[in-house]
Length: 225
Image (cartoon, rainbow, N blue to C red; front, side, top):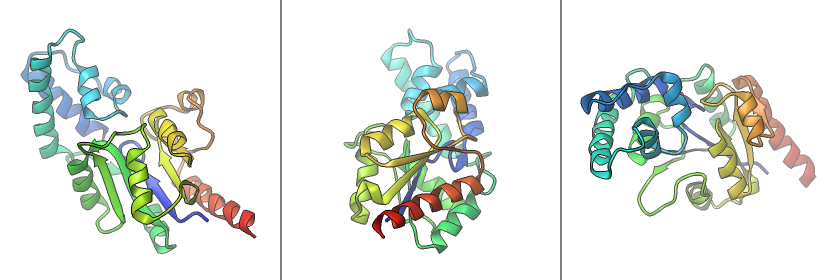
């Protein structure tokens, strides 16, 4: 029986792209590198901010310079991660509705754990049972570790949860955990790309997402009857 809904953060429940782009360009500008467009930044996200900055900088940047630019980005983003960020339309209502129905709710993100905590507390105060971001000594998505940490916290098996995401990283994560995955079309990847990456279930708005979750619950109930 479906008991838990686990959400990706960036591109799934929060539109964080403008703030990410601004912090990337603040760091690039400070060190004299060419700025990036919002579409370039969109294509860079999904594997955490370290990879984001690796892709944003020229490939020949040495390690010492990279660390300085990366630190500048991180310092700026902590201060400005909520300047323009907002939940996607209907997301707050959907999450609150799931909470009222008794689902356990979690966020698993490749964003730093501190930033995940800040954003979830600001935009969804008291809603999620647990949130997990990138931390030391635990592998980030698409490795299954962070999602498995959530399942262990709740005492659940993979077939008792569903993962909601927007990228190929989320598809791979769900496969590595052995759980179902629903992809949203409003995030950082387009539908054709998601299909090429193996997406089996894509929704276009929060009504469809709620229906998909309810269908998953009904499907499990029918099997167990």
